[in-house]
Image 1 (tube, one colour):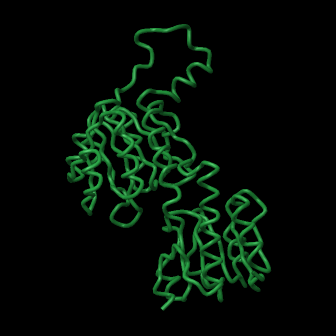
Image 2: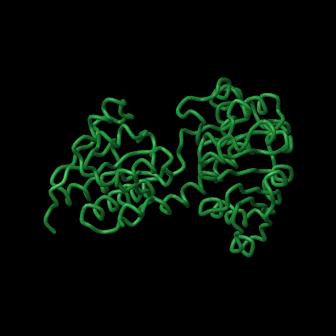
Image 3: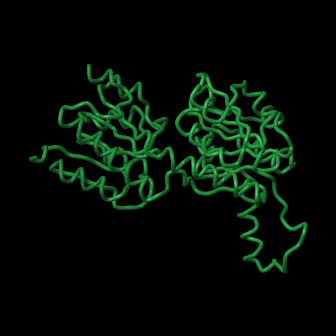
Length: 327
């Protein structure tokens, strides 16, 4: 198929198969050559005169950027979330917005279980202990952690990823609770999950795993009051969005041992951490690795590129967020 005369901008390096799809389809493709987030000035300059922009969750796409991209037809987000884009402003300007749902479900669910095991069994802490030369031999009281099998798992947000996390509990004979606006009958049938309100889930769960979208109703969904409802032996896990948790309140709860520990793959003011978080030994804090497998990140790249290709060829992008712009 002949190339479409169009100018595409990619705000950061992504796996090569996604770039190749764009290069094969369009006459001009420019990619940020540096492995870093663009400055505001660079972003504004980069989007000017483009027919499409493939952007990342770390790019703030607001009205100013959308105006700078006058004539652009689509902002294809390389992420399942799109709270970095002012979708209403894009819609008002007739610009499509797309995302990459589905492809990162398993990788993120796997990472959530890695957090669960790491914090409950003190794996990261033990690794540091051994590397520091402090391990002098087996001891009955060395780095005792929390039990996992047979415990209660609470899922806050039983969508694709929350469901995938819950289904993985079957091998550990866990009781599953979930809190969601919509009943998940499939999950109830698969693992006997019980729908409850958030307060009940927090009080009864040994592991609380967060899987909600970030919006005004979920910002600081977990704060000091909610942390106070959790068992002192419970663990909090978050692989969704950082601002869902009041990080300062979490630091206080962890420092005072009001909960046993936390595993966080995302942070409220990412990449910055709340003061004191990094110094705590009862929290595991990987650098946003939820979708960080070669296969998943490549699928995200090709899906984002497919959204661009479809839009500029006059077709419906497979993952359009605001389909009203096509009317």
